[in-house]
Length: 172
Image (cartoon, rainbow, N blue to C red):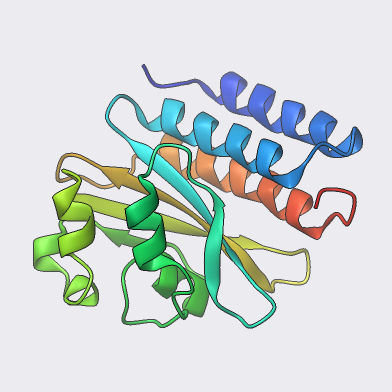
């Protein structure tokens, strides 16, 4: 079941309260990932990857992805020609891959999501107020499709909350 803009605002507001209460970053990011999954509907899995001090992507919150998948993509270097999250982190732009089989950016990695039954994905960069990329919020689909305009808007709101959590020193 997809959510309404009101549900997205509720998830955003809850994240802000969690930040204000200095809840652990993992708890806040997991809340946001769950909201993104509900927004996109059944069978969708979302993930937040965070840039570390070396500029590599690390798992921030991915409660519904298996650990072996997360291990395989751990420390992925942002690059405009690799996957969706690495490309979004490198370019600071939304990257959409409706079908892994048809996208050259997935040539070396497509076997990983395909093995889990995913067909495509998209990723929204998580940006600080100054525009610096802090990470990505990625969504995997089990069907060939692109995010709807309402999904894009909802994930944009959730990514903003994630940026606030990542930038807040209380949420470590």
